Image (tube, rainbow, N blue to C red; front, side, top):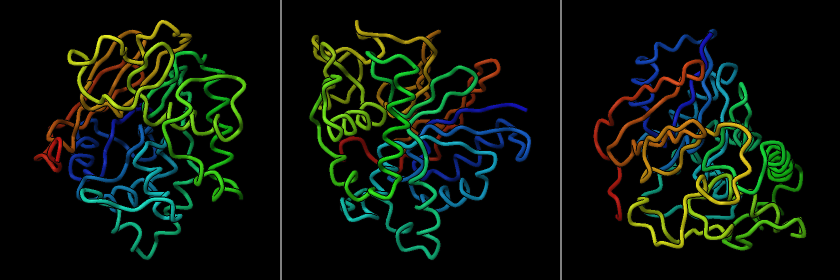
Length: 272
């Protein structure tokens, strides 16, 4: 049995199927771990979500910001805008089945010692602390009081972790760190700059190079297409920007080998 971690699919079903063929994925034997953002912006979000649900006994996922956005639209806390491609899911006959399953999914998984998340792990957290906070957040957004927690989920503040945060503040920060984080400035999350490392202001540092780093396990993440495919001993970024015309990538955990298939074309234009 092999385990493959797959980067942001975002509704790119053709490339997803091509990637599974590339890695010679064997349903019932191999296992997939998807890094979130299964849906939105690409052409076939419903098909991707249905495939993942149908193969859920062999597929694990973590939630990304676009998955949470879909759930927020479903629950009435967000509205789709130009470029979003979630309407077909919301209008599908099996929408409730798919979304009730999706909302139960976590923000973090630990597989063979690897921390697997969508955007990253806040550099001031150990793996144990991050996993505890992720589970607390999941209990809130997936539980009976989900309406309350989705109502307070969105926003850029607080942007720095403190043990004295209120329950709502801690929840919002946790969700932001796991699903939206890219840059930090002295431990504070920055959501304004989304570009490449070389063009970042001097005061900003990628979260994985923060002086606060408490990492005690390698981290695998996606989310940051401008960073692209990047692999070090401590972390791997697998978002190669498929929807922008890049590639869809996978990492085999056993030997950390990378696999990639090129996008058929750009489904979205940067800055559009």
